[in-house]
Image 1: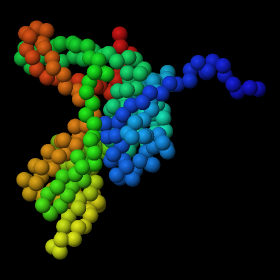
Image 2: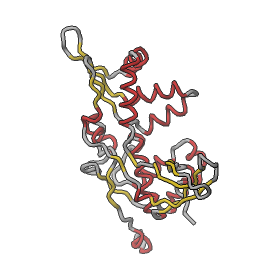
Image 3: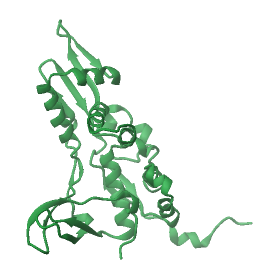
Length: 263
């Protein structure tokens, strides 16, 4: 019996190029690129992605997978060509890929609600996802923070670690410290003789972060914030339909209904 199905001939997926916000720079530096991608699946920070199938979409009806944030991992593994371990991607790359999959599946327009901070009126606006700017990582040097006696190499937060930290912490202080430590991949420190030592042990890095002087910690916080700004910029200039007050609002993407078709 033939296994050829003529019905599937017209269903061959079309893949589209998308540039990752990280451009793959940190994956190359960390040597994790071969763990995350098949050979040639990422070239100059560009990967290929397709729209969702019906089977893919049904994953989002499994509330357990959505709440555990396993759904996006399954979706990306299905839709991104040659992607082996989506959980090791930087969170900003995950968000950008999900956004692209959503656009390819349902179109570029979505409706966003926001509450005016002046009169509390609930407004609704239409947003074109493709018009939102994307901040990309320029080069490796943007990840480095230099002090007099040490250098800090910090990457944007990994999706898997962001999920684990969110589940493990019950207060903002612990969560913030854990996120910072997770992003610091190594610290190069000069000893008394001027020779450099490289520290990669997360336990040692965590102890150091907790004991560092407030002035240096402030610089680390600022660097952490800047490094994690890559990705789709969700800030919009809006005007209240009731009182005409102008302000900025964030486009909040609710992952639990992210792949719901627009009316």
